[in-house]
Image 1: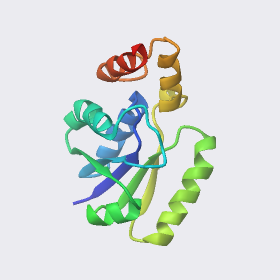
Image 2: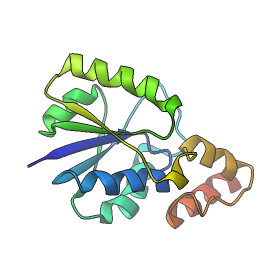
Image 3: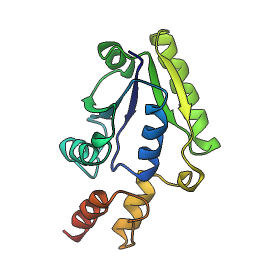
Length: 159
């Protein structure tokens, strides 16, 4: 089975993430969307909330599985018997960081390849950080995220 890992914080999942997942599932038998747990970061949504939002959106896509992980990505990939890591590239500014990470991951485990996928053009400007900022300022994010995510963002910022 050709399995790939699509890792991220997904805080929150956006339509751009979902587009990359759709592209990846056409290339692999299974895509594991891996939600990172990082004690160093203070996400807006808890790990369980991020997993729930992904289950409600991407979890309904055929050949997609939602999982959580912490630690080294290449170790998680090995444990999942995945031969590839999917990374989304929106702009040239993403490339430098992603390129460094891909080379480090290759150094740690040469059996895991990194595949870069670009989302549709209308999502190239989209990021979770920008979506959160728009929602925090009371803007409408419904065209950037699935409905359940827009509702969850509204709930977070009305508190």
